Amino acid sequence: MNNKSRKVFLVKTDDRNHGINKLMGQFNLDKFKGDKVAIKANFNSADPFPASTHIDTVRAIVNKLREIEVSEIVLAERSGMGNTQDVLDKMGVFKLSEELGFEALALDREDREEWVKIKKDGMHWLKGFYISKLFLETKRVIQTCCLKTHRFGGHFTLSLKNSVGLVAKRLPGGLYNYMAELHMSPYQRQMIAEINDHYHVDFVIMDAIKAFINKGPEQGKLVQPNLILASSDRVALDAVGVAVLRNYGAETDISKGKIFDLDQIKRASELEFGVKSADQIELISLNGEVEADLRNIEKIFKDEL
Image (cartoon, rainbow, N blue to C red; front, top):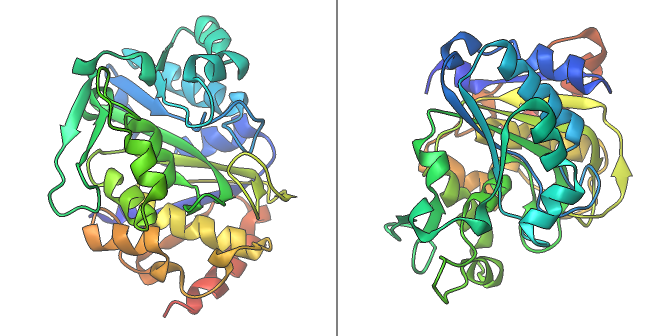
């Protein structure tokens, strides 16, 4: 893990185009030129932001990728609360894809050969799981998530939880319900982390302009941090995301204890695809307005040490 992967960039703004351009500029986008890019957003349901990715977030990411002349862009999703095709249609993704010239793909309409089996080896998944081949074979992967708590066992749904949408509910032609297993398991949060050990992301953008500090994922008490964050390290980003939720008054179990003792982050740290402790995270502010939030996050992280 290099130094770049430990950095979490923060900008305070309500202008998604400005903030996302500023954040994406912190990564070496020249290496994306000529490559295919897969995007995993957060369209779990057709509920408005912050339940789902704001369409202007997708627009800003795609426009920036177009500037650097990538060869192809595919946004792919499997919704958990509703039919994916309908969710993408209602949220304006297909309309935007036609406007900007990228592909929008409902993963639950994909054929059996478009899924790859991940074996159980060392995981809490009883039978392993199937993950979208697209995200294993595409050279460049970008994820964008929201900031919210999760009342159905996940505790919080940030970049790690967003990866559940890459896993098949049922393999086409199969009967076994992998999502039923996930949501009924006492190890749900560990299983969420384990998905992330099996695919790479170049970086993640977290749209925290608004957030849910209770309930979630599709509704809850709303706050407005006016923050957008980015990192190439999902564990670091989620740890900072939890700190932001605490800073803005989280009313659930994630408000207590050490962040790196929370099941999702603890299991992810054990798997070593991201940072293992708060002192490995470098917070980098991209404008003066974010300094107060940054100081509060640093105070929260002091309790980790």
